[in-house]
Image 1 (cartoon, rainbow, N blue to C red):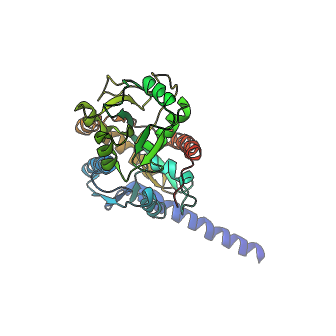
Image 2 (cartoon, rainbow, N blue to C red):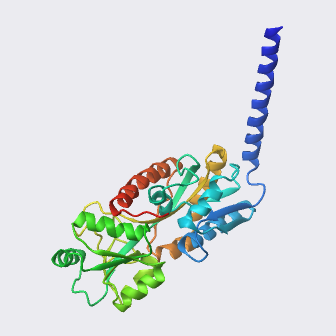
Image 3 (cartoon, rainbow, N blue to C red):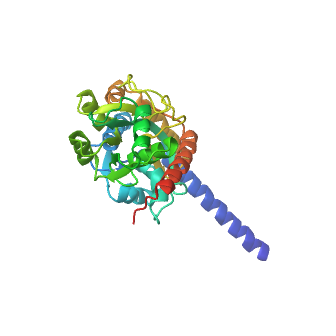
Length: 327
């Protein structure tokens, strides 16, 4: 009798496993069968939002199902990230991970999600480097001269950023650590007030985003000293990298990708990856993003996962070195 009970249980479990597995396979085969939401942890109008909408439009065209960008800003992208992490793992919730997601685990004392455990990383669309600029009154023409000036005037020069714990703040901290200089960090609430103050000469140095800062350098209101990428940028080929100017291995900047809740079926992840690669190959999307200094990546899920882990380690060290914390 006991054997019969065990056999019955085994049959039930096997039937359930077959049913669930079959349903998942059928769901993946029919994917997508309804609209998809793409969660972005930023307000509309920025690079992350623009790229999500451009890719979403390509997916809509390919599949005939609408991809709806859902902006969920707040708490340094943590609000949108938590919503995505706790969404059903069925492929109908996409998330745009950015450099903030690699910074926040060290910057914030507690998160209600785990960026490694709770997500499957699909593709890194593009990297966008930062740029180092100074007010024209600062008597330097390159990064080496800025380092020499900062060493001659320790603790006098002020460097602005878009906020405590932002990639541009931490780029400045990495710069100071690698070059051995002391400057005063002045955080702002976003790029607009920061750029306004460096253009006005209220601060001398600024680490910022290429897209918002480069026009001021081209217009002569600021002087560009370096880009923070590993190699020169097509949008500004005359601006040398910090690596070229003696800070070997220096590379910081923003990046933008696609992820889904961790338990999303591999077949769906494969479909999303293949279509996302085709999306960023579109000429009009590349032209628009290249003008902002973007370097397209288009890596595999495995490569993106390795990259994300490395970014967490790199930015974690920068956060700890800076002493930055957000309550």
